Image 1 (spheres, rainbow, N blue to C red):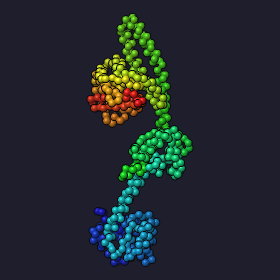
Image 2 (image 1 turned 180 degrees about the vertical axis):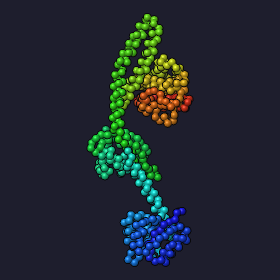
Image 3 (image 1 turned 90 degrees about the vertical axis):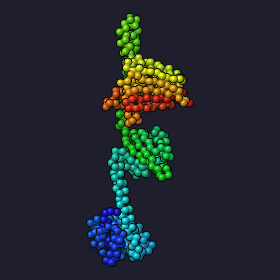
Image 4 (image 1 turned 45 degrees about the horizontal axis):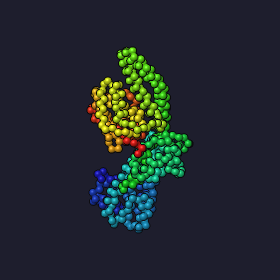
Length: 482
């Protein structure tokens, strides 16, 4: 302890006060000691309190340590209070400590005083620091836009912040006291899977989770909330509690629903005229071929290629909206996977004038799945490979049998993907940027691909080197039903 200690010493015997000062000096404690010997002087000292610790004799004529300790409490002073007395019974010592004294010293054993002073001050300062940290944390918790909830290891609420009260309507006391079940605030249809996540966290199987689900407010409204949950374990690895940060995302969900409805409507309305355009284009191509009008026929075929691109985009949009609604329908059959890859590569080679798409597929296999949906996945991955390698001139497509399935890889030699983009490329509406500009697109293609692959029991992932390109991999089981 480097700073000078400021001590208020309540003592009416000068010899004892000198003895105590000498004991502290002998222990090389740098202290400034102010001695007071009656109630009035002690009261004035408390009014202008600047001390680190209070030392007090017990008996001071008409004034004693019980009253002194009470005055300290009433003044709201929390520094250590050490009683120094000539004699003390065990019962008296217990009573004084219960009243709030931090320690007591017998006058004929003053050698323990220096260590008691240092220990009490250090402990008090540590407690003050912890209290300050607690107050700052509490301030941030109470003023954050996120609600804070602390749960016990069974999933029952222990604390409930002001913001949580604003989100759900219940006060902390109301919510904690009225927990008939663990999930009376969760919308009934979501309770089963929310309960499963809670059980996984209570058991320690999950240490963190981020979920969105519907909740019920005190006044019966249904709201959407996003939850960020984390587990606190003891030194033995057992779950002590888990904590949640929660935000109301109802407005965001409503906007997403409006957007999805708009996308679904626009996509559906575009599909019919596009089909008619494609049909008329095919009829015109047949007529031009009969008339041997090669130039016009070439233009019609180029137009047909662009119509195919637009058709695939609309299919992706429709699938996206159906995925959001949980209504995407799969028509599954057995088919030769490499034949499908060849069909997509051949079709895309007709469209692409900038890249050679080299198909290096190995042994083939028959798989069970939705051929059209998987065709769309392969188309999207190759299309991205072309888009994100504008300075390259070839794309490598390969397949091989791997474990109980088949693995497809699509390699480009383009800009590559930054590490911070890696975890987001399969998220909806996320677009990869390069050279400080964003490539055109809606950011839903890879999201749709990942959902289709997931439903087929497969995996999609990638490796990448900045400036050298990326390779996307798709693994599919032979039959995801097994």
